[in-house]
Length: 307
Image (cartoon, rainbow, N blue to C red; front, side, top):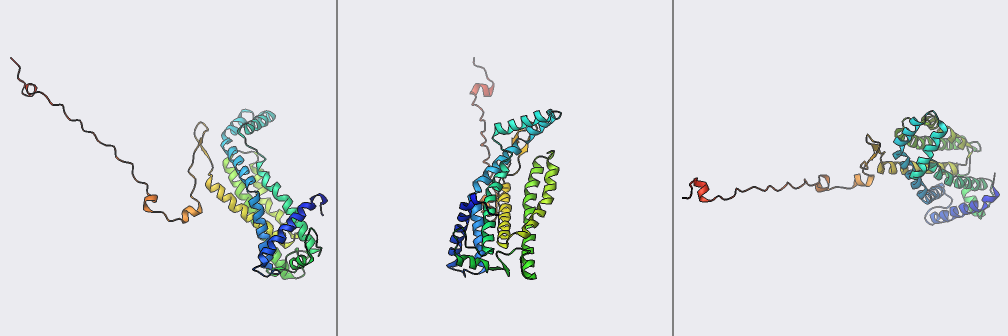
């Protein structure tokens, strides 16, 4: 189903696919599955780089919510018998600190139009329709490209051979696994930061249900499944990078955040350190100042008295 008001976005995605494919075609066979797989992976990476500022905004908002967790727990205990007042106070606390509970939806919302556009463009290729600015030559190239033996625009149910169904099924299974790992990484972090969160049980259920949604991709073209697997792997690496650099805050007895040293990144672990870097020099010892006794007069030393 095409949305006419999104034709400009379909055309933009098709144009970017054309440019990337032409670039790889200068060194690779333009009709090979490798060329088309690299085209889709590169498109995915470019799109994720563009929305990276939204990811940072999401993570910073999430971190502020972590730092506000003790105060939120206190409000929940104080207004546990008045849910409306409790929600108002919690939202006022978030707004005052600049935290947005819905900030986590920004990257997903930004990706959704690209996902729909990819689906529409690939469906046009499967239907042998040179639409959205694509040439017939480009459509024929994508239509006959094979990724591990399965056609790029083929779906699981439309695949002609059993071997093609197996290939597409394997990609669907990988998509399901990476979806689960992505949601698990986020939910585990959320549950650790707020153990008494009333939504914890629902988040845990979502974590185990989310892989089932990936099986709806049995109706998606193989190229779209490859796009989804790539974006899941990118999200896993991106979240791991941020969580390692920004560990969960700890709090003192008064509920104030205690600074925590970030874990060293991958490059810091691989970089060779000198012995001076491994063990910082000891602090200089304090200089000892000896008190010299004051010189006494001869009469005081001998104990004689002046006459």
